[in-house]
Image (cartoon, rainbow, N blue to C red; front, side):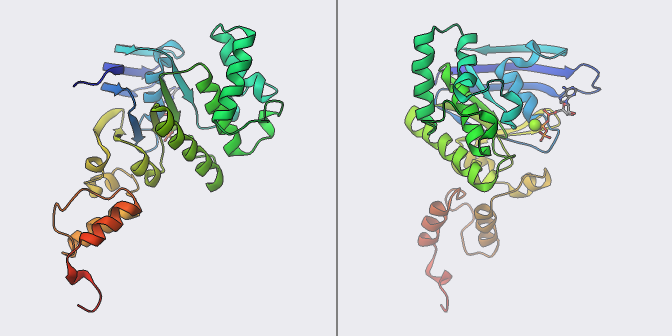
Length: 280
Ligand SMILES: Nc1ncnc2c1ncn2[C@@H]1O[C@H](COP(=O)(O)OP(=O)(O)OP(=O)(O)O)[C@@H](O)[C@H]1O
Ligand SMILES: [Mg+2]
């Protein structure tokens, strides 16, 4: 059965006005319902630009040369790196209401939706607070609540945790896990937090100099750590350990999939030959 494509980019090229080269170079990409996709790439590679193109904000809100096509069914919600730059409301409820007013909802529906998304992101009781006075994690959860208020089919997040402390980053990823598990939300998230992405994403994209270098299921994506490291991508410790054990002959070549979490690694360890055990 072929899965329904929610969003498709085809032969998409983009050059920002006044820039020399293309920021996106012949991008083909299909997003399917319920998919969770991670985007990595070195600084300046085009991660933000790719998300802007997925959101339809390129070419709509930017000047430059565009070719190719973008087809999307339904709304797309976007969350950026620094939530504060997006805030326009004086209170959390005003902030979320703006998105809903722009989408043409009436007052009763706006109030209903504000209560619903605040509960979803775990910020009940925050409606009268100033978004500027919240912690980093809370701010980012307000930004996610605003994006979710209009019931998007897809949620795009551009480095949502890079400005946050570890606690804030945990809050955001745990909310994303909840959206994945409970709502089967289609999510695209760019991040340098590859440890998180390896566990969270079904599929990974590597963008380099505007080109989509890899687009693969997560375990396959992380199966060539040297190439990723050469692109400046941090290969999660668990995966480095796996390849080290392979190099030492302690795991057979090609034995099982690359472990993406501690649980995966423990499973592999239990299946290792007895010679692995200390003193034998
Ligand atoms: N508004 C703009 N005008 C002109 N060039 C831009 C603009 N925004 C980005 N660029 C250029 O486009 C390329 C891709 O930038 P982009 O911000 O998408 O990269 P990125 O992977 O998100 O980088 P980072 O990891 O630093 O966030 C870079 O060469 C950048 O300098
Ligand atoms: Mg960026």
